[in-house]
Image 1 (cartoon, rainbow, N blue to C red):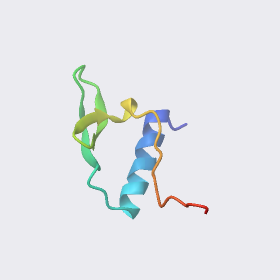
Image 2 (spheres, rainbow, N blue to C red; image 1 turned 90 degrees about the vertical axis):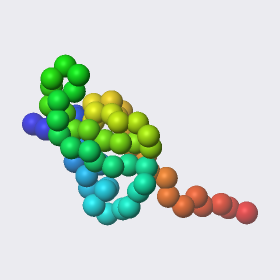
Image 3 (cartoon, rainbow, N blue to C red; image 1 turned 180 degrees about the vertical axis):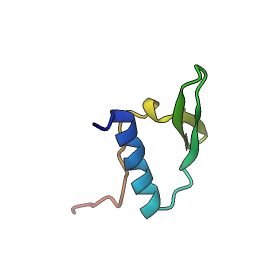
Length: 66
């Protein structure tokens, strides 16, 4: 069974394949400060491991009803 972190990584990778963003970048798979290999992402100016990302919500066009 796929774990939560791996599922989040797959969701982010799918989004990155279909979209271009200056705010989200995959950095690779390498050890964290404890030596555990994890997927790393840059979100804006922050480098975080995938387990630090709780959820994703991508904002699209906002529909306004007059």
